[in-house]
Length: 464
Image 1 (cartoon, rainbow, N blue to C red):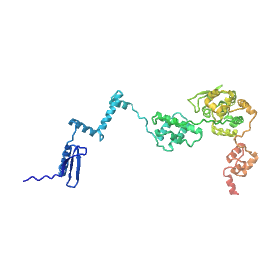
Image 2 (cartoon, helix red, strand yellow):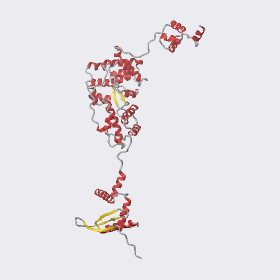
Image 3 (spheres, rainbow, N blue to C red):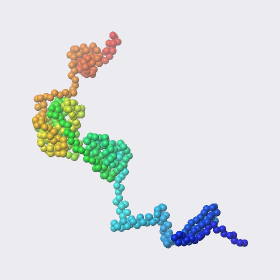
Image 4 (cartoon, rainbow, N blue to C red):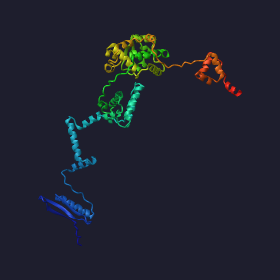
């Protein structure tokens, strides 16, 4: 029986290119109508492709195609193993990158393994990511030994950075963010205070690797504050001192005199103890500069006269209320928080004609003296009169002041008062006198006036 004729669907033809080189072309049509036309430069490649297509058409499994290579079987095995390990990356690129790293390490006098070991043992990340909200909480928690007022100022200042986005990372803040937070504050002192708070916070953040630099260092310099400080006139000082020595038996006289004639800050006076007052000096250790600056302030003769008449025993109870009453009695045209200290430093400057000495005694700087306190008083007679304001001199020429006190009550005579309390109930009788029913009852008991018993007026209404 004759062998069936093999049907050949594809053919291999040789042809010459326009360049004159020979090529081989596989052409034909598959049973499903697909046209084949593909060129090869090597005849072996064309024959292999033709054989693969014939096997595919006949439905037989495709045999492994032989590839031309210069690699040995061992090298091919290594290449296959390497390709499986590099997860789809180009083997040539991986090798080239490795050789480049090895060359860079060799240029530094080491090998790649030693370089990586050095990096692993010494590398620390440049920044740690932390939100401004969490950083603020951590910052406040480690600020030990600060006053509650200072802590409150930190809290208010850092809240400005939280307003826009509390989840923003600290290292992402720029100078533009800080300037935007301070845009609405036109007052130089407010700007300077908030800048200081920001600077302290970001210095802390740099130390803890929460950011690489302190953005506050990029702030433009603020213009100098050339405004004159507020101070009391000589007449206002006389009113203040006289009010202090007459109000509540002079309990406020010593603190006011220390502020006026020694120039202590309000916070320093609040921390002052009786044992800090010496014969010739006051030892200042408290106030907002505690632990940073300890100094002694000389006691001028005028202050010695006040302390002899009114010894310092500490701030009296209800100091804020008493200070408000003294301020009202002074009738100052302008009153600021440190006006008493400003007044003291101004008069000391004009008396001593030595800014450095006054700055040393008052715990400030020569720069601040020259900026605010120089030539603030022109009248030399006023300076001399200021340092002569002893309690005796004030009592000799008493200033007219108005101090809050208990209203004077014009009590009726004893007989008239006894008649009144038996004529109408205590509530109504008290209104006629201008006092409360409790005050009226106490006054009657003090005078020995007998009062109606409980229920007396109810019984009178029933019987009437």
